[in-house]
Structures are given as C-alpha cells and as structure tokens.
Amino acid sequence: MKTRYLSYAVAGLLALSLQACSLVDVTDIAPPFKLSEENVITDVPSANKVLTGTYAQLHTFDMLVNEPAVTGCMGLSFDVGTGGSNFQQFADNDLKADNSTLSGIYTGWYTLINLSSHVIEKTNLLITNDPRKNEIIAEASVLRALGHFSLLRLYGQFFDTSSPYGIVTWDAPVKDIVAKPRSTVSESYALIERDLKFAIANAPQYTSAKYASKQAANMLLAKVYLYKRDYAQAALYAAATIDQRGNAKLEDKFADVFTKNFNSKEALLAPPFDDKSERNNKAFAFRSYVLPKMSYFDLMAGDPRQTVAITFTAPPAKLIRNGKFNNTVSASGQGLTANTEYFLRLSEAYLILAEALIRTGNSADLAKGRDMINVIRGRAVATLIPTTVQTKAELLQAVLKEKQLELGCESGEEWYDLVRFAVEGDINIVNYKPNVTSKTRYIVPIPLATVKAGNNVVKQNPGYE
Image (tube, rainbow, N blue to C red; front, top):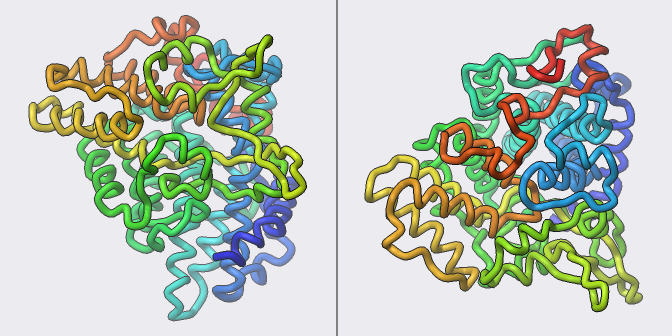
C-alpha cells in the first residue's frame, strides 16, 4: 500500500498528461491511448500502476477544489471570495454555457471515466488467476461510477428517471473522436448501478480512504438510489455500508475527521496528500476562493460543530474562514496549503439511511430514522432529537438540517438536497435560493464548446439552448 501511495506523484504526471490530450469536443475527452494501447497493461503489476494513475485524477484542481467549491456556492454553504465571476454564476444559480469552470469540471470527470474504462477493459483481458485482477477492475468501476454519477447529478435531470436528459455515458475507453448522444437518465443510472454492483461483489475490504473498497461502493450505491428516489434500495445499501463497515468507523470526535483528513477511518474515499511537502491549494482555496456564509454560521448556533466548521481570523479583522480544511506544516515549519476532498464519508451513510427510512412513512421506520440522525448528533455532542418529533414532515426537515450541519462547507451536498427535497414537494426551493424559479435551474448547462463541437449531437439542457 505504501508503494501505491508513493507512486501518486509519478501517476499524477500520467493523469495530467492524458488530460492534456483531451479536447473540448463532444464529451471533452479524446483517445489518449493511441500510441501504446496494447502495451500499457500487460499484467497485474502494470494494471496496478495504471489504476494508481487513475486515482490521481481525483487529485486534480477541478475535482479537489472547483466542483465542491462551486456546488457549495449553489447551495447554502459558501459565498464567493476571490473565486471571481465564474464562481459568482454558480452562487447566483445563473450559469452561462461558456463558463470555464463548468467546462473544467466536465472535462475532469470524463477524463476519470476514460482512464477507468481503460483499466477495466485491459485488465479484464489478462489471463491470470491472481485475485487482484478482479479487485483492480472493481476499484476502477467505483471510480467510473463516481464520474458518471457526479456528471449526472450536476449536468443531467437526475431527479426524473423518465427524462431523456441524462449524460453521455461510456462503458469502454474512447478510441475515436466521434459525437455520441446523451443517454437517458434511466440508462445513465443503469450503467452506474452495474459498475457499483460489480464493485460490491469484487472490491477489496476497506483499509484506507486512498482506495476504493467494498464499503465505498456500498455507500455510493446507497447515495445513487437516494437520488434516483428508490428509497427502499437506498436504505438497503446504506444499512449495508454501516453494518458491514469493517475497519471504517465514525471518529469519536467530529473535529478528528478534519485533523486526520484522508487518514480518518470515517473517510471512505478521500485523495491522499503529503502533509510535509505538498501544495495542492485545497486549504488555501477553501479559505479564499470561497468563504462560509454568515447565514451558515448562524444556522449552526448552539451546535458544537460550529467552532470546528467555521473559524475567524484574529482581531480586529475577524474574517470568517472555513475550519474544516486547514494548512499543514512542513518539517521546516513552513505552512503548506494542501488538503483532501471527502468524496465519501461514513457519517453521510447514517443520514442517507435516516432519510430513506423516514420517507417510507411507517412509524417503525420513522423511529429508526430519528435514531440514525441521533447517532450523528450524539457523536457531535449535540442535543438529541426528542421522541416528540415523530411525523414524517418533521423528521424530513430534521434530516435536511442535519446534513447541512454535518456536511456543510465541504462538497456542496446541501445543494443537491435542496433539489431533491423540492422535487418531492417537501420544500419551496425559492425560500432558500430565490433565483431558482424553475426546474431548468436544478441543473447546469452542458459546456457550450462541447455542444458546438459535436454539431448538436449532444443536446443542450432545456433553458440553456
């Protein structure tokens, strides 16, 4: 495992070189394996090496910083600091299709998908009895599913399984630059589910957030079903994540998640970094490009997590700052700006289970859902939700708020929660985000260059034509 981690630096160069080959064309990916495609993966060790390069894509700025920052701006966590006009469009929920940040995120996820598909295809061809073969395919399948799901929930009508506005999906590496139309939402979900079910059956047990695991696949599939509005399946896989968590566990203290970062056993998938020498700028960007909203600070009043999530600079300025992503210090005492991104965190599985149970509406599940919320509140040393809070409507509001308290100022999860709860009729989204006056603003546009390069084979989202 140590060898795999140390090879991140070399593998990162591979991922970045492949990304540099990508074109803003059709789906913003180009075939990067033309020169030595048949020779890249020849055995299990070489497959491991290319898989490590695939993980390194999660370490790029668009994945590590830009996407969680701008979705937090779309939601309730962040105001724009020095992020500029591109970020402000996200905060205003008024995106233009030529937004360069929008294009970078789109390109980044498709690069991950293409790298993952290459690993899956070529490793599958290996003739070997080495059990690591299927584990490699399973880990790459989790990464491909993460890529497709991340694209679907941002650029596709994920909330409507009858919609034709899914995403362009790939179950094989791109070999030719050709225009490919979008899959339907239902078809998009089907590929994501297929990859994750394979991973659940074949991925290794959780040992570290650096790598995909059976537990990470279980949690991601629970999240996928929650977004798909298949609450029975969401509950099933969320419960499996918790009950079969293996070496993963909730940290005893909320603050420990963010001091241990990718080494936390609560993190199920989080890119590593060298805290003694690296400057990936996540910590810097999350205390400058975007800043916590004062309304978020006020929401957390009386909650012990407030002083962990939000800090202030020294008087007299006392400027608000994100407390979850802090600098590290080099061996020579120099401040460094690196940090991680929590793509999957175990505490969220408890809240997925809570919501899925509450949505059934029966009294036993309502009580179990409240218990799941209280597991997270108990760890935070916050006041538990009393048994007098017992109706479906009350408990849905409780889980919506709890996700903001637990996960705010991280990855913009509250934006997607607002959309999902609005679709279900639980909230009026304009009370939270006044500019979101129609469902067309529940998602963002496909990058303009992609639509143009494909001669409109990739259809633009309604409202952004």
